[in-house]
Length: 332
Image 1 (cartoon, rainbow, N blue to C red):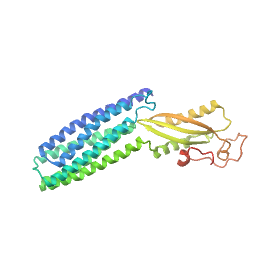
Image 2 (cartoon, one colour; image 1 turned 90 degrees about the horizontal axis):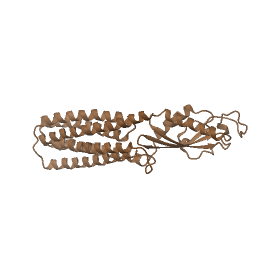
Image 3 (cartoon, rainbow, N blue to C red; image 1 turned 30 degrees about the vertical axis):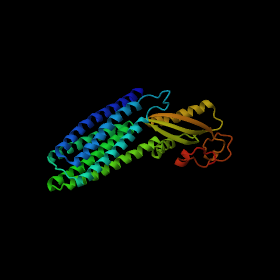
Image 4 (tube, rainbow, N blue to C red; image 1 turned 90 degrees about the vertical axis):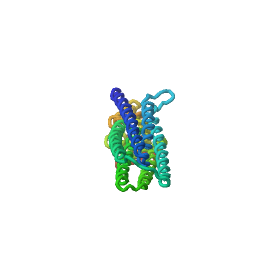
């Protein structure tokens, strides 16, 4: 298990190193295309690539920090470093988009001579294809290892690809029509798209930094528990989940029969922990609080040998998101 975790960590670092080196090469190509053509449309691609270069190295450092083990000063580990890097990426993308829009508007009033557009189109097209392949690789490794930094970086590279496709179409029109205003129009459109992409990344990362509840993931945990829980697990509630990088920190309350001895209660808690750990490849830090049933769950309890019933069994509690996450459920 430890060997597998080490392999996953080294894979994340290796993936980001490849992305960082590739982003530098792609940026160099786009910058060359801009100086050859003097096209503000191609400048939009080059400026966005500066963001790719900066954020790829920030992300590389953030992943390195996030993979450090927990210590005395960071008892929950360093996983949130990835969220910070993704937030920085979002800010830089917005800034790049704003600069692109400014340059596009300026070129509408102060046009310049565009040259060697065919060469520029070829370079932008190749760069767009490379961005797509690198983005696909980044998202694949990110999803496999639950790395929001790699996933958001890959999505940004894909948005860069889509921008490049539109840019190539616009540049081809410009090449054949020789209408200079098209260059600025292209830049305005894709500058706006870039800003929107940055805002989406910021929204996602700010949610993670604020520990916003991931209801879809919590529901997934709930369904696994419901499908596998024995009768002795009368209820599970107060379920809380926080993500720190590729580590899930889970707290919940397990309701057990009131007369169960401490060692048996501990064993049931271990069974619940093992159930969750075995169904997720991410590392799980699990904290459990056990409650007695207070003889208030009798109509939901299927344990027939209990001699202290206050009501007959009617139906077993089924999974319900509101109850699952509620702090106290004695009055049910």
